[in-house]
Image 1 (spheres, rainbow, N blue to C red):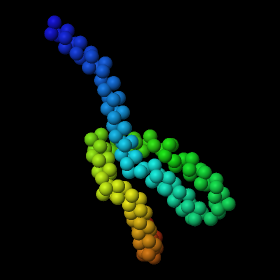
Image 2: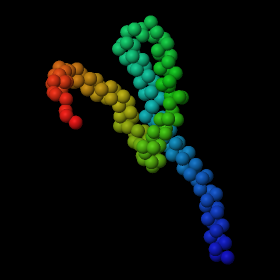
Image 3: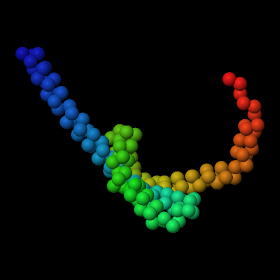
Image 4: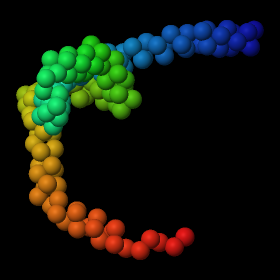
Length: 156
């Protein structure tokens, strides 16, 4: 009798396990979605797409006559509806459901909102800082490459 009871419990557990896993996945994804809403990911994606189009057109003047086509193409492939599920997947893989909830709580606070608002600006400034630093020291890179090219090929 006891073995039959354990067998029934085991069968019930095996049948219900996929449903429980799906529920956990759904709530995990919901937690990621809530965080992405609070950190204004949709707005950030749109701003990134706009900056990408501007940079692409500025760096490739030959594309200027195709300005509208370039912007349409980037908008088509870098928009929130097309990227949302992939971004949610990234967050689900990077954070536990509990961590996502903690992050959401933080980003709902005034300092969290300030961080969310300032982060894109800080990332851009940091990127620009790196580019400026590399450009300022480009001559050194050229010298290093020249020195490397003057070395005899290594014997194998």
